[in-house]
Amino acid sequence: MKLLTICIPCYNAINYMHKALGSCLLLKDELEVIVIDKNSTDDTYLAALEYQRDYPDTFKVIKNTNNEDDIKLAYQHATGLYFKLLNSYDWLDRASLVRVIETINDVIRVQANLDVIVTDYCYHYGKKPQKVNYHKLLPTDKIFGWHEIKRFKKNQYLLSPALILKTQIVKNIIDHFSMDTSFHMEMLAYAPLPYIRSFCYIDMPLYCFGRDPFRWVKNNSLKSDELLKVARLYYDYFDIYSLRSRKQRNYMIKYLAMVSLVVSILLCKENSEESMQAREDMWNYLKYTNARLYNDLKGTLYGKLSIVDGQLPNKVISKGYELIAKVYGR
Image (cartoon, rainbow, N blue to C red; front, top):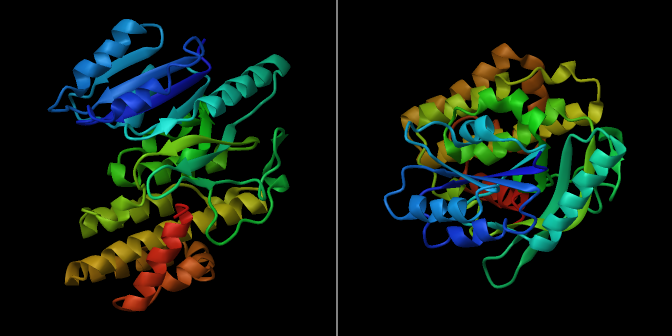
């Protein structure tokens, strides 16, 4: 059995994919690397096949000819005990990867239940590397629950780059990956939350960004109806108030507030009659389907910035961009 499945979606990635795939060559016996080619028009698929030919027990290459969801497709072929998403223009730090595999081996040895491994991550573009860490929030090198997590700061979230999920949890959430891939990393961090009971934090930066993950917010191409669909998917996903842990509930509300602010900013950025109506529809939908959640979102900083009648003032949009950029560690 493989300990960790790494999913790497690729599209026309021939110029940068080798760093991502090469970072997974360490500990080949413990890793399973699933490369999803999204109908590339360059030599991405052929290059990935070379890795599969050279390391057949580690690499699986799948051509996504039917335009299926990448995470769903990878999960169908995953055999690892844990699951990690890696973009083709990013890579994994090798020393941190060794530590992760050692941790999984320890969990197996003592027969412990561990739902998610949390690691730091690092941005490697710009003038100098910038590390995002959780050492003031989470206990280190032990298995712990929600009650041991300290208070989240207003711009502090456990984002997808920090998470290594138990594959069984991915099974519970896989049906919710049918939206535009722009929100995949956010949903992969939000959807598991109701099923997570146990954490382990490794204070080393595993995930290394080669590109700005915030760029999709700046260059959004989703239409108003698609953004409205995204918001409703989040709002309807799970009954937050059925959870027993107050910290778990509060964190999920905090996360929904962040997503709501992102969607509101994108709709206001479009600044059309259709987008303004979609923004009003988004809040009215939540208000009349889940008044309790609506009121709780209104009480958060991000909610207060989002739930403003009409077009958001430019200074509010700028402040929103600034806050969301900080969420991504920028």
